[in-house]
Length: 113
Image 1: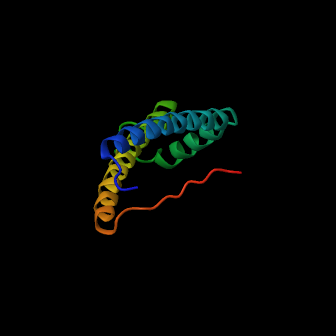
Image 2: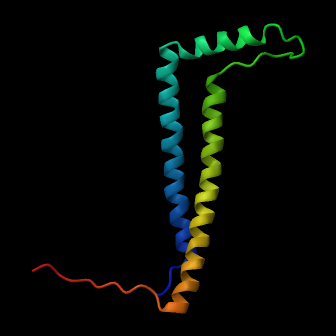
Image 3: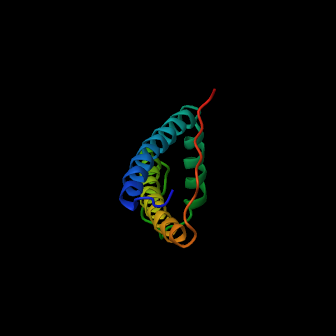
């Protein structure tokens, strides 16, 4: 292979990372639902309230909610989409420069008998 088109790499990496974003958010939601049904977050929230009950400086108390967990997963996933696509595109530019210097990768295709 002599050259990899960076535009094709960008489109492909955006498609793959978009699918991985959806998978990540769905998996996080499923894990949250399982842990919520087991009562884990009720225990964690009550422990947090116990530790922050004496703190009069904080107006609002912190608690783990579905919006916080799923929203956080979506934000982290979006950051991963941007980073994965950018790194893949930069990698294609680096490959093209290296392929110009050494001639690329030789691939031999053979038919099965």
